[in-house]
Each structure stands twice: as C-alpha cells, then as structure tokens.
View 1 (tube, helix red, strand yellow):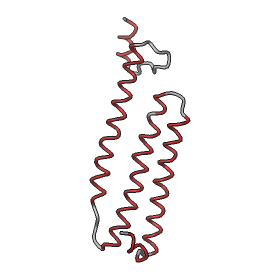
View 2 (cartoon, helix red, strand yellow; view 1 turned 60 degrees about the horizontal axis):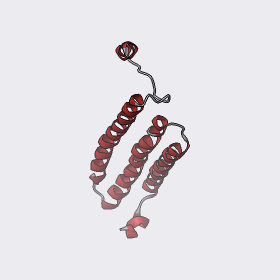
View 3 (cartoon, rainbow, N blue to C red; view 1 turned 180 degrees about the vertical axis):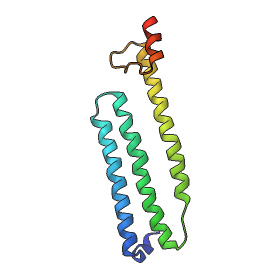
View 4 (tube, rainbow, N blue to C red; view 1 turned 30 degrees about the vertical axis):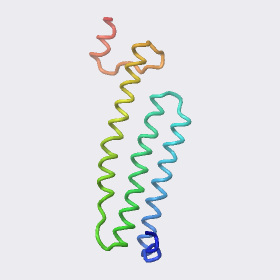
Length: 126
C-alpha cells in the first residue's frame, strides 16, 4: 500500500529511486538491443541481460523500500531473483542451441563456426 510512502526516509528514497531507475534503464537498453541488433544470436543476449539485471535493480529497490517501511527485512524478492537468475540463462541457452542446430542443419551462412578444436576436425571430416 503506497499510503506509507511519505514515511520513507530520504536516504532510502534516494537508494530506491537509484535502483529503480537503473533497473528501468538497463531493461530499456535490453529492449532496444532486441530491436536494433542484426542476427538472432546477437539479439538473444540483449533482452536476457536486460531482463536479469534490470529486474535485479527493481527487486533491490523493492527490498529497500519495503524493508524500511515495515522495519523488518522483506525477503520475498530474493525468491523472485533466484528464480529469474536460474531460469533466464537456461532459456537463453536452450533457444540459442536450438537455433544453432537448426541453422547448421539448414547450412545457413549466418551460423557461427565451431570454436573447439575437436569440433573443427569433426566438421572437416564430414
């Protein structure tokens, strides 16, 4: 309930506004990266980083605000942060590997080449 917001001390209001704005700006940069970057492989990283870091900033702001207002630590946001930190990179890897497999099967010219030496040798033998 935002009726208690005027009771927020100045130092907490500054910290909350800093983390909230930082999270919003990082999320916005990730969204712009999704829109502006060229290939799927470049596009997939920007929103993933923006979502993880941006949401982290918003969660820190929420933790500070409600911990100060309720005079006890509020840790519900920690569960959200853990869930987001675990699921977002896993989703990124699954999407990127599926796209990489599809592009290699279709022999797309935009596919990044193999980086590991044994993948290069195996590719040359085929």
